[in-house]
Length: 300
Image (cartoon, rainbow, N blue to C red; front, top):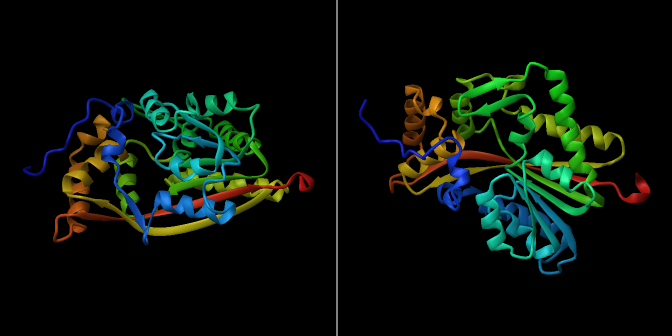
């Protein structure tokens, strides 16, 4: 079949191991007039006033290169970034040379921070995979399901509770999740579900598990939960940029997905349907902004 050629990366997840490559392929997501970073900046301003006061202990879990951390850093008296990618941590350190960094996957990073507490913990697009990792193993060979779902559920909930224990009284956890029901994410779901069905039958599973765990904590008097949803679009400068976003970021250059002829059909059909006359591509997307505010000390 003739058509555009996919832009191959070197290997599975290589987009995360090459410094600068993720940010090069990342599409700006716009919700109304706001980017994902703007949404976080607005929430910080709502809670803490104008940036620049630098009074807070701040931690970004899955910090990447620090792109969204930039909305937190102007409030930070101290800043910690956690990421499993050495390339991401190098870029983060270049951006925030005074920050402390932890190069580890999320469970190990949280364990290293267990003696610390924070006023603000961010997790932007970064909690889904650590939660899902208790239910399935994703590698270059494919997806292997964890057969002990009950044990996986306990471990995943404990991961969330460990994060909550890092909050100071009155501290806030701010999380961003892609909306798995948005048109963009429905395409991504089809690509991955050909390898294995998601836990719980839906790619909303990790977000719903997070929300359920936060709600249980709120019912125990440990804090309160706030959920906001925003609709928008991922903006690609052209079809090639949109194609790379799907194949090398969402699909992580997974060989089984890229070699499946249905992938080409799904991605190309979706891109064509949302291509504008000027050649740009606007992919309908959505985001959840989830917040947990820890109870003050005298209310715990």
